Length: 291
Image (tube, rainbow, N blue to C red; front, side, top):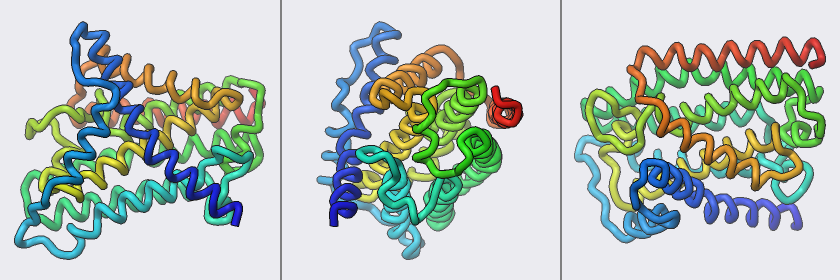
């Protein structure tokens, strides 16, 4: 019973707190650009507005289009449940570890891409194709992070990564790899741009272009939770003793990257994620050497 309460409280925490990270990133970006911009609580207002609106469903769509937002949000909540927040071990550690987290992310991505194809929209098909291209480059780098950390901690259990107090070259390199993966997974510049609806640059936004109302709110909520899960993993690798500070530092770093570099062409993303994969290999070699 206590474990169920911990899981529920942890999921509520991710749902309630995760939109703040996006608001914080936007606020930092606007301050650097010397713009007033939106407030840090704007994502909550956006979600409330979407939940209060009706939905427009494409006529030629099937049940996949309607079910995808629930599957995407459910997969992200399961991923959030795998993260140890209030206790030293994941509350659902029997369900999976870091490798399972990669497959859970892939499940949400698969259904979102499938729903984009289900509408029959040219934009949806284009976005789904680009998303699958990027994911094919993200997942190998993500796996190398798992291998590097598991070689150092002796387990793929997420809880074991936070038990290490000594910061090594391997863990720092793995955290940097995970940071590059997080940029791609959360549709941030230079891989994608959440603030654009231009045909030549859309990836994630192209897949959700046909969604509106409550369904779009569920997808946005899932994106917020996913972002917080990734930031939490980065913080647990580098700042295991002070996770909130590590999450805030990761958010600040993302904001600095977004205002410092330009959006890449799609085929240049392969170089960006190739660098992430190489860093993952370096982290694994350092873990084998014990440094």
